[in-house]
Length: 300
Length: 322
Ligand SMILES: Nc1ncnc2c1ncn2[C@@H]1O[C@H](COP(=O)(O)OP(=O)(O)O)[C@@H](O)[C@H]1O
Ligand code: SF4
Ligand SMILES: [Mg+2]
Image (cartoon, each protein chain N blue to C red):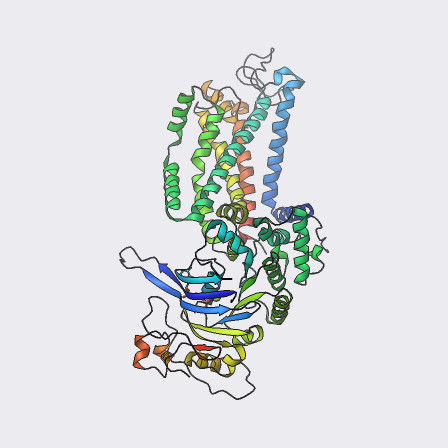
């Protein structure tokens, strides 16, 4: 197939994206990951629609007037209701929203910090590098749960934003090390020297020349960070340290546990399954991206 | 006034010692090198790998900072410029690197790559820059420019990439260009094309070219004058034909006898070099070539021979003098 020659900047960009997608498509595992992700996305969007169809499908306040306790799957409640007669399916949808919200924001913040620190540390070396890497050592040893408790106490409430903030602040360390070592080798490359000969400033070299070359790696780590953030939120909420004003999968599990319903399969199983599948989806995407980013693994 | 007047240029690289090493070791990559380059000239820096050619070239474009010495560009010492003055100087110089697979940013389209010096030096509007980039592509025979302008380096061949690198070097209209073995990584079949392109552009834009090469046959084709370097020192400097036809320095003689430079006049006797190239790390005093030189005298191991003019335009650094 003769390839079209791009005539504008945008055509060129779209062509690059298409090529990456072609490469990604080769990977069946990656497609499963994308499939799952799309499913959860639609699921999360539906969550906004449901309460408008009938208020009993509100995840938090949708008490079904005809049901006063947990009930197994039925026609009105496809996955049954919880202890207070609220629709489990609607709660799962809300959980998907929270998972996207927490996973993506925490990961984006962590990746932004980690990538910047790695770039600056690797590029400048010397004292800057030492200071930043010591900071990373400290960040990597900070204990998670005590920090959540302390910060929640300081803020005066258990909030999802406290969670996002702490997850982000505790998880940029690893990625900054990876980006740093990548930067160490990239800054030696002649294309960086070419930029310097032309008079590029350090900032321009870091963010315009080296930055885009580490971005695929950042993106790869981002998918694993999303995964980690979702699991962390679930764990923390299960322990009762989550945000009680929003219905997340972890909160659902906690309600399930505190009402002594651990063996109520239609209540316990779905959030657990959702957590597993959504993290699996990001894991599979990460693996597929890994094969593109690290060409050694690439099939010929 | 020469375009470039280089005085006692020296670059030492400090080698980080181990934990218990008190003394730092220095690589004497370039030491006490002096020469002048006239406008419009093509000046060759030749010698074996590791003799300091690339370092010397990078010093000239201020890619690395000199340890000592001076570089007068049109009479102004640019060796220690900083900040905006250095950026201003950079409008005059460009460098073409050895490996076109490494010297182009893989994430930059050809447009981004060639426009980058213009953007950095704040030349033109985006539309004007696109025009300048297209012209630069035409200049290096990448026609039509639309076929290349929005492609990425990995879609191009080695020869095309090196042409892109040449276009990037030309786009800001520099006065002089350092080309660091720009052919050595290319397929033999396309080397001549790139060489001829460089020569043609040099004439067309009245460029001054500093051409780094380890290949004397290439130097002969490309350069008006050639300087031979040995372990950080300049040992001989002359018009290319003069240097190849009438070398004085024992090292140059050995080098010429070892490489097949076709000589119409006579068949050269082959001189075997004894021993190996010494390391440039903390080198011993005296002539760097002394351990291998068949003419070495006592003085050679004690004093540094200074580059002196033995005939009009022919300089050598040797106590033996021909
Ligand atoms: N950044 C550096 N740090 C330490 N040593 C270097 C560095 N760059 C070059 N050298 C050393 O300086 C000497 C000259 O190198 P170079 O100028 O690249 O030689 P050439 O281009 O003639 O092959 C070599 O011994 C090389 O190992
Ligand atoms: S100075 Fe002495 S050792 Fe060096 S090249 Fe000349 S004769 Fe040989
Ligand atoms: Mg070199």
